[in-house]
Image (cartoon, rainbow over all chains, first blue to last red):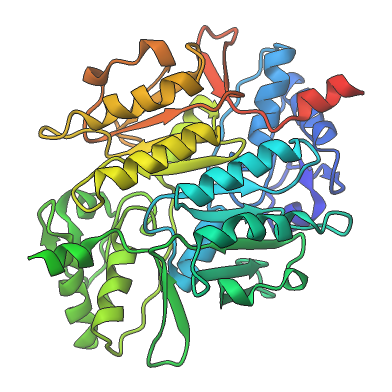
Length: 222
Length: 222
């Protein structure tokens, strides 16, 4: 059971396994369908991309079985979320304390999101923004950068990553002051470094970025 | 190359592959050894547990090749970090915005850590604490809960997880006001819910916990 695009990515569908395709959106319907099949005694995989536990279907399934108890067994199998792959592709951006914030205000009031961005800015976290922008929602990422600006240097590395792990994968490191909201769409992960994050060029001509845990400072202190 | 305990977990060491065992601690020495072998033209895997990018060796390797440039290719392969597995084991605790904070003040000054805990408390994140306690460091997790107390209800779910994915795995959900620092050691991950996180008992008698993304509120609003 899943969004068609994700089911297409599943390799080796075995004999006897049936695809239950759903369109984008209406996550509740998708989860209810999976739960219904399980109630009928079927073994069901509700397929998500990234980590099923992170901005995906696991929480909704638990929400539904909390409100409407039923006798099905549920197991969550974690996966690699976009922020982990983005960090790995550019180096080691999440090498120290980090947070993830979804900018979608479809289900969360904007005041709550704004409070989180302020807290993350003041707490000097490496921040990954999920759902930064949609066709109808273009303001949020602009506001987020406005909140962050007083707390981050102009050269703070920012990672823009889309289609991670797919042939169309695109990952870029830019400076905080180079950020252009037009470069971002619904499928982009935007990761803003902490005050300690650093970008540097290697001999291969490519730029890498990481957030040190403090070993270098320790070396200097010796 | 890696900490012996992690190398023991590697299955199917292939012919021609050599183990380079290192004791716990002195991460710099371990990373330098891996870099040296790579410089000699060897293909090297620096093995970490969890995600190599999260509180592990990836950032230190990038720190070292930033300070002392060399001509080796580096690839980071992300993995499942303890907070993801802990969340999955109990349900879906990281179903909404979350952060990770290391409480180790070996490399990070306590004032910085304290500022992060305050920010995470005010931002209402689901918070995962790594390195909550060691034999010498017993204060930090107590202070962390003191900072969080005014911002979290007494019944906020707290997850204590250790030895995730190993035979000795132990995962418990308790209430915020039941937290006892004596139940925590160096290898425990401590995850504190947000104001929205919820624990509930299922028909199997077990307690599960999740952080809703807001679908239920949306349903009510209809």
